[in-house]
Image 1 (spheres, one colour):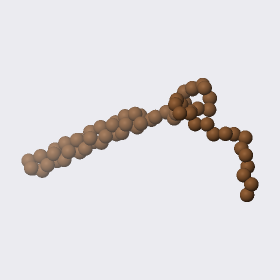
Image 2 (image 1 turned 90 degrees about the horizontal axis):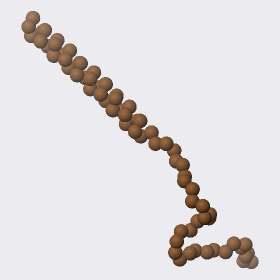
Image 3 (image 1 turned 120 degrees about the vertical axis):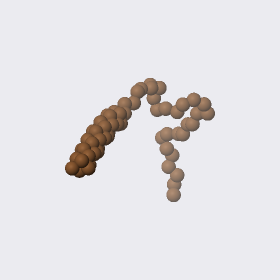
Length: 69
């Protein structure tokens, strides 16, 4: 096979950064919704705890009624 000469030649500098352009720009990424998920999860946990506390209180009230009757 014949070796094909490339139009480009490889250059790796010994120091510094390798980049295609001399302009550095900011790269935007997807917004992170982790905090919102955490807040929603926290609210749901509080609601669940409040519901469990209400159920416990109702059960205790029923037990007291059964004991006194």
